Length: 143
Image (tube, rainbow, N blue to C red; front, top):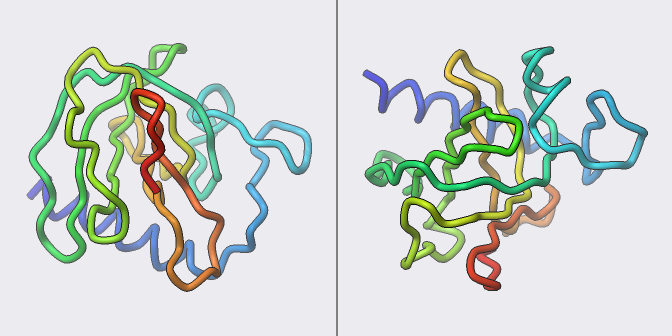
């Protein structure tokens, strides 16, 4: 059931994200800036924000293999929040050496949920209609 909920969240986020412009959505910040998914984005339960930040990997989850394949892991951010990262490995390379305790920087779209949220769209857009996201691990960028 959880797998279907995550898949539905990612699919909905991708569907609604396709119509976005290439500008980040500034929740509680100055227009044109990026925010990490902390503070206002979490407390306001906002979704759709293009966010940049970093966190520590606390758990590696099995890949989601239904529909587009996603590498999944939990990041703990500096402010204490936990977020799920759903990284599309049909579009971008997998982080093969990822393990608990590693630091991962990210740029992607934040979708709030009752467990903290999901960061997705951490890859380039093959159609060129969406701002490219990325993950950075051990000085290597995955996009």
